[in-house]
Amino acid sequence: MFILFCEICHEKEATIHFSEIKNGIKKEMHLCENCAQKKQDINFDNNFNIPFSIQDIFSSIMNADIDNVFSRKSEQACPKCGSTYNRFRNTGKFGCEKCYEVFHEQVYPLVKRVQGTLDHTGKIPKRAAGPIRLRKELQKFKRQLAIAVDKEDFERAVELRDKIKELEKEINN
Image (cartoon, rainbow, N blue to C red; front, side, top):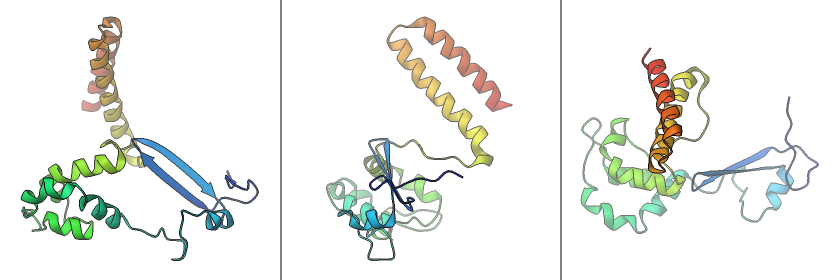
């Protein structure tokens, strides 16, 4: 088994793990309990819970300059569960999966602002890894193809086109 040691003292096992995604770049920090408690920007008074919630983050961001942009759409309700965007703003939670579609105009800019991207960059469950990995690879090749065409690198574009065709066949089978 692989043991991570504290990045500050380098002596004790890291038991506290932080991840930060900023502008699509993931930074991680692994600390022992003692060093984590000494770190000034982390509050451990609540049984090692981070002192804020995702709801607090979304709420603070939404109450800033986004407030004016979406106020006209805030009373739109989800046809499946009846939830409103204001409910999401107050609780940080949607009522059902359909809410993501209904409120996508308001939520996508918010998610992009918080995460730096709309693309998933985290881990993929093993049982879903095959099809998801193929689709992500296909998207990557399509972006690379567009860049190659813009740069008039037609040899690379032909290679990418062929890879795209192969992946599309694999996905459809």
